[in-house]
Length: 620
Ligand SMILES: [Fe+2]
Ligand SMILES: [Fe+2]
Image 1: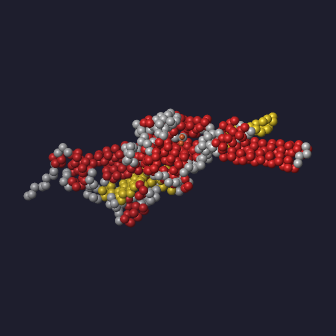
Image 2: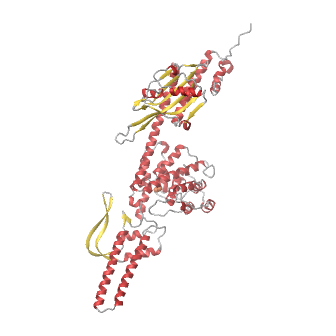
Image 3: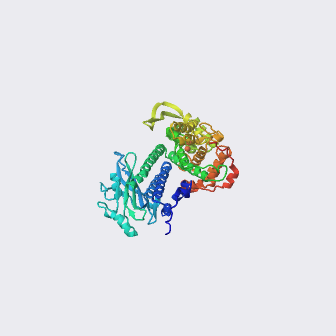
């Protein structure tokens, strides 16, 4: 009689390396099955326990580290299926949709179970993410009543677990979807376990459904108490991890929305300021992405992860937050004479009065002349003289209209014009001033004794003589102070550890590498990359913007030359400008935001030849 085959001694075969063996077979699909025939029941049981422990441990590590909620849910489904040896499964997340009701902001309009992952080994199905968007969500209420006919909805509504040995024998639930799926695909759904995913406050956040538990002999069996406990050993930590991640996401979303709302609030006063902020944030993000993707040049090693990218974008959204307290008539000062409102109208009034004075004077002269026996032509000469003076004043007013608009460099003849008009006077009987009434500008006139007033008063004169743009020195200082405010205010916020440098990134957007910027005059290596990026985005946006009330849109090539000059003079980072140009980010931006006539040719090689200077890299 032949000897019965000897069972191998697992410990002897594997020696001290049992751990490696277990790890190896665990990483193979059906690894344990290959050895099943060779091993004793006790050995199989030990390996199964080891496998399950490993699965639970691995999922725990993922739950701790993973931040994507869909990935956490998918891991939960994978692990639960592996632990119970289920053929298929589905995992849903519970979504609450709020009604937009200002009287009851927390009112829930509807609740659904959304498919996150769906797997079936026999049917070779593994759907998740975008693949699954076509699956309609399962409503938790139908016609205002809890949906108790669908097993997953029942589980989510009641918090009860459901366990069916055979769904075809189950009463009280609608399995028509399951049976039509079976019929269409030649499948047979049998055992089913439906478990709620509950957070630490017993709120249901999702549902896990497992189908067809395969027994060692290949037959389908019902889910056991041990199966349920094993699944719960994964579903509880998964729910805790999801809840924690949701809370983090909610805080981050709330903060981001708050920052956006502040910028929008600023936009209520000055729409172009809001547009500027939003565009600088997007531009900063795209320059940072191009920098991070570039493997060439002195910044080849600079790489940003998603947190760092989000930080740059947020710094962009916050960079001009200090403008909230800058008066609107300064932020949006369209013309030089705008102190709260444009005073050009008042100069027109004075000039009209002056023209009437010319006429009165002329009529008085004609009367006197005709009484003295003047000829027709002498009287006409007096009239012509008056007409000439009137017409000259009209022309001067026209020219003054142009001088009132800002320019890059005020022409000499405009300066002479202002001086000339300021030296002339007119008889006045009242004085008009702008007052602020309940936040709105109002013109208020005061009656005065007849007096002689200049055509252009001292304040108007000094504003009209602004050589560049429309802002006086004092107004320019008020605008500049926004950078200091942005910086100081942001320093007051208790940013999380990872974003402690954000106030610097946002606050330093007007700083220059050569120390000539403001508000703190930081320079060189102290100027962080993120602030250098925002500095470029900030100036580029301002130069090419086509929605500023005080300036004409600038062609792309001219803006690049101005930025080039700033690189050459050591203000801006040349390497970042090179990346900005070579990545094509500037063109993508131009196509989206600029007028077609602004988009002209930028010769990148010539630009680099003319302006590129190697910058001093930042230390942090
Ligand atoms: Fe700024
Ligand atoms: Fe800005």
